[in-house]
Amino acid sequence: MSAIRPATGLHDVLALRQEVLARSQALKDVRAASAAEQPQSTDPTVPASSFGDTLGNALQQVSAVQKRSSEMQAAYERGEVTDIAQVMLARQEAGVAFEATLQVRNKLLTAYQDIMRMGS
Image (cartoon, rainbow, N blue to C red; front, side, top):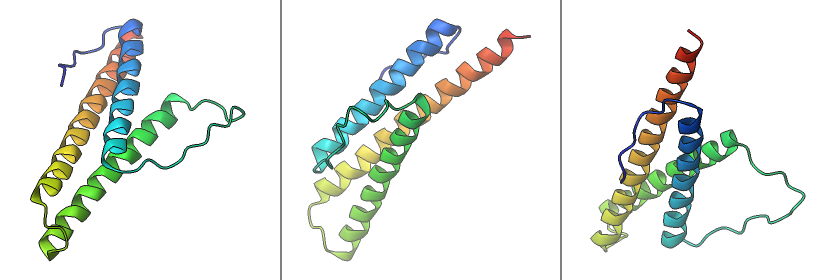
């Protein structure tokens, strides 16, 4: 995972937004690789999602990955899943997704604080 540096200006905030979108796409790719992807609407009349929607969707995906990991762990403990590698992979996936989300939150908070200091 790349090191994340603090945002200091508008250019950095835009770069942060692009990084959030890239990480969101990476989480989608991880999720698609581990399970069948649900069909999505390709209707051109539907407006493009906003930054808030994209961030909300990313958080929902992270939550789904963590829930899946918890369910797999519980199934392993009950003896329903016998492949420990699948359980450990799901736990690692959830950990990486959470760490990425935490880093994005930290960057957004830092960017917000920098923007608030600009008016002073």
